[in-house]
Amino acid sequence: MSIKRITAIVPTDILKTLEKQLRECGVPGVTVEHVQGYGKHPNFFRRDLMHDNVRVVLYVQDDKVDEIVAAIARCAVEYGARGGILAVERIDRLVSLTNGADIAASSLCECGE
Image: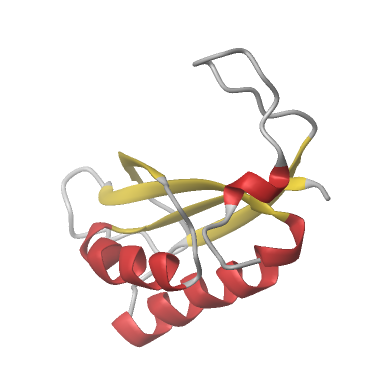
């Protein structure tokens, strides 16, 4: 089974709802970074065009990607997100810096499988 990285850039105000959705999908952990940027619909009435967003990064088993992507998209739509983007990438190797060992895809889910 392979590992995928899901990166979503979403408005800051949907973070709590998104965290709940990800926990319900069995995601054991995420990395969240505060970022700024502008995209397809910049606000030309702002002084600097930048919007505050968060980048959410998580590593998941390949067979969980569709469920998690759907949960993130559903969360954004339900919350009325004013924008955002999501990417899914293949990971060739994931290594724990605690002990130098490779991380198995099966350890990336708290589901009862």
